[in-house]
Length: 92
Image 1 (spheres, one colour):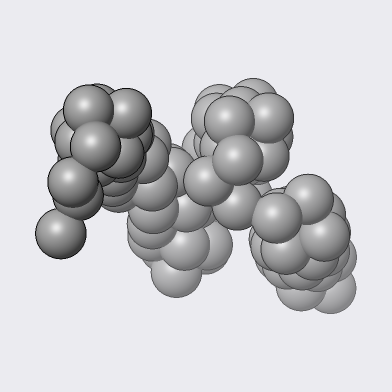
Image 2 (cartoon, rainbow, N blue to C red; image 1 turned 180 degrees about the vertical axis):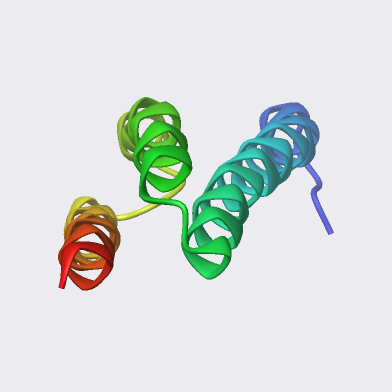
């Protein structure tokens, strides 16, 4: 339990940051789910648009410290590959 005034304040700040981070992480997951749903529908244009909308939001998660940079790079790379392969599958 926090005893000093400083530690009590830090505990309050930690709770506030936790709420902000939780909201941001939820928002990122929503954007990624929209990309997954567009991929599942098989519509490359919708998937590409959803990915384009998701990228800045996910990268913002990196700058705010919610996600690790390599994790985001891997996720974006894999989604991008799936969107492009969706277009190749449709033309073949």
